[in-house]
Image 1: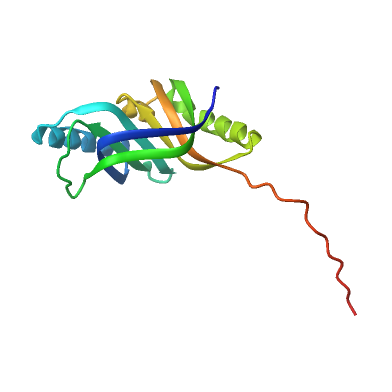
Image 2: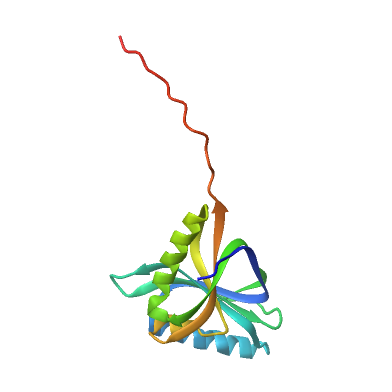
Length: 167
């Protein structure tokens, strides 16, 4: 796994949503988003960015945030928020190609490699693909770049020891 440090990612004209959803609900929401983009005479461009903030095993839902790049500004709605710019800075990044069910293992591997490099990662992981985000819900192959914010771990001087006296 080759990791790139101090990487940035920027997308312009982005539609964003964040909700707690099941897989079928996500597919329905994506169809509504596609219809809304088309209704506004806009088109998807480049990338789809997904971030899974939390997975809830008790009910099979996930707290998902998604950013879809489009070719022009469109009005926000109750469900979808327009952003003129989406930007990730101070990230580490690696490219992933493999089965979607193995993505969490890649995240874990990245965590350990980053720790060895003196970096502390700050989730969520942002998965940038060319629209294959549904593949993350299935066990198919996916190809994406994974970004996560990272900070250099502070190194402190050796602690000063103080002898306490008790009476």
